[in-house]
Amino acid sequence: MPAAHRPAPESSHAALLTVVVLCFGGLTASLVQTLVIPIQGRLPLLLDTSAANTSWVVTATLLAAAVAMPVAGRLADMFGKQRVLVTSAAVLLVGSVVCALSDSLFPMLVGRVLQGLAMGFIPVGISLMREVTPPRLTTTAIAAMSATPGVGGAIGLPLSAWVADAFSWHALFWMSAGLALLVTLAVATLVPHVPDAGGGRVDVVGVVGLAAGLVGTLVAVSKGNDWGWDQPRTLGLLVGGVLVLLAWGWYELRVEDPLCDLRVTAQKPVLLTNVAAIAVGFGMMAQAIVLPQLLQLPGQTGYGLGQTMLEAGLWMAPGGLMMLVFAPVSSRLMRTSGAKRTLMLGAGVLGVGYVVAGFLMDAPWELLVASCITSAGVGIGYAAMPTLILDVVPMREAASAVGINALMRSIGTTVSAAVMAMVLTSSTMRLGEIEVPTESAFRLCFLVGAGAAFLGVLIAAAIPVVRRAEPVEAPVLLSDAPAYAER
Image (tube, rainbow, N blue to C red):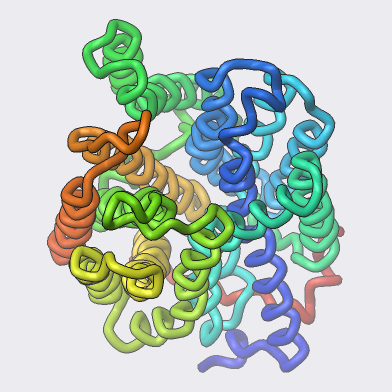
């Protein structure tokens, strides 16, 4: 390896510290997504409103995250990745404080939207990895950062349940505020501000158009089961959202400095990787929805496992940690077999996990095994996708391209939530005064999840392997950072 690419020993330590800080930030941003799930049933009383209104406390965060990821990526390419990372962490801090001080619906929704906007931290952090790590660390760093959405969500559920039980519900948000403050300070002082700002103008029309189209479409998909798929507001939002996105795409192809360069996104390797991201995201969310319900159903059903929310979260947590454990495994696979085959393997393992789940439903430990297999597949697949993207797109558009890929995963999770809800409500049995999903409905969910994962394998197999046309710049030596860093 040329000397210019070989960081000094202190630079390697600084690079590792940067990776740790970025992964901690990604975990924190992801953790807040599941923060309110343990108290969701109590929110109508806590916020003095209806259950239908409090459902937006979760939905608003997911919608804001979907919009934030591509927008944050573009802003990072324009103004510098470290600046956007600090801003995202600060927004998470403000949103957490707003939620902690809230006792009614409106300020809570404002805070949750701000928390969702902080999810732009993750794709920007992934795209920065290649610039600040030595080559031998880059793939492992990207794999670890890519795993943080799953790990943060898995840790967040039992942690939030414990905090909500042991303290007040406001403590959940003071906890996230404390974590966000640590992330903000760490990113501002320990992550170097490399000279990667590409300049350009902010595509305001593109931001508004993308936000309107995504919100309309995703609200219709996420609320279709509650409102009814044939209801005017569901159809209006769905059709209107799609039409806005089509108009947005037409505009983006004709404007200078677009929010998203669709010509780059339309390249076959990028396009197919993004389509595969939808399938893998679908698979990840399927287990996150189905397994907790199966664990918490009463034993009187004959197949429910009678676990509390905290117990269910603890059974699910090891699966999330598997994503982090498999980061170095994914890195080695990408170096030896390539990112394409690694993505195929990840999607295949995910599918096998769902097949196993269909046969292992009789005890919590059996679902733990299935969860670990599916999570390992998600971790392997999520690690490979940014590498496939970064190997093709120009470095000046890296953050934007990774943000689009993260958006595709988010779309997959949203569609999965809607599909799993439809499947689980299509076959029910009466338990006292409530209707609960039948055992066959849970098995069908596992079958659908497996189908989505194996479809991801086929899509990944069609991704062409492309050699980067432009040379990859040497990573910045972090030991030299004081010469140019802006703290």
